[in-house]
Image (cartoon, rainbow, N blue to C red):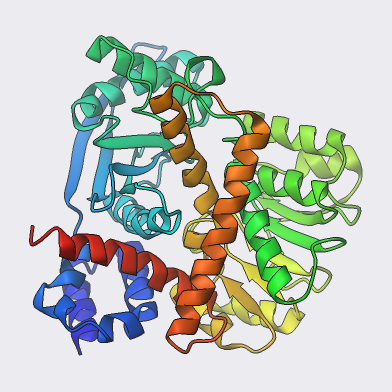
Length: 448
């Protein structure tokens, strides 16, 4: 009853934080065989300690627009768990950001980072600032104000933020510039996702998408299948989806469906040419809200205001956009479509009931986002290593490190599930493997 009692206590305590509660329930329920095999966890109150962030920082961010009007936003940094290394996780600038979302992302990041095998803890941050429609100078002023509030809490051996939604290379540059101004020295290991001219890593923008495809290849290999010729449906067309499109095309597959806030595109020939991939890159930079321009340029189908979950002419689905994108009704349509592989990429893109439904269905393999999308933070950690050693690896070297990392994550997830008699349950396996590493570190470091 230890797991149930903890979850119920958390539901009473955080009834207005649904995203966070969903993430906690998924991890604890998936790791049940491991937790029940270790009664010492209850004595140490381990689950409640895992569910509470070590530190939750909230601050105001005041900035001035181009007309001289003053605006006030809320900034966050959740330093969730540092048991295995400095806190590591992205910053998200998006108008729907709130404390619940930041906490759930920090919680998920803890186990994702543990799966990489690298010495990095879990953290997340951001603000309810919406960069859409803002001028470059407005974004600069906001980033400088945000970092002025945050800089005293971060550092290469303390907390290393990165980019996320709404925070790309430009924003990281502005944030790092303000950090350098405030600190008076060049601590290039304090942020990742930096430009190549000042310590960034090659293939970082593509890393999450590349890693997702490498993980998919391991799933296919386990099923005696290959990626060549596969048709893929990807939600979104941002950095992650773009990376998926590039690596899939390189390996002989093709993304035939992708979506945006305005609807979805069906390109039966696939996003496989350099022209199409380059257009996607420009479109995501210039208009992150509309994917219809792609359909107009390349003469393919666009369906306004709809999602493509349930289409029958794909082999693989990869939700790669936002959390809670796939609900139970969508999951039922996915099952009916006959698709064999459901590979989560975005952070918690499937609501809990829908994920549990898909996991119970025969004929469909489900892989969890905390394993599949770990390549992004993995390459961020490699950037930290390059900064510490004053090295700069080639694109091929970074890509090879990334591929090995994703192969290891799949293998460890598979072995963890097998150890507890769960067969090829990648969701449970990933949660068990990540949970085990964090739990061991916390127990060995005592009670605090």
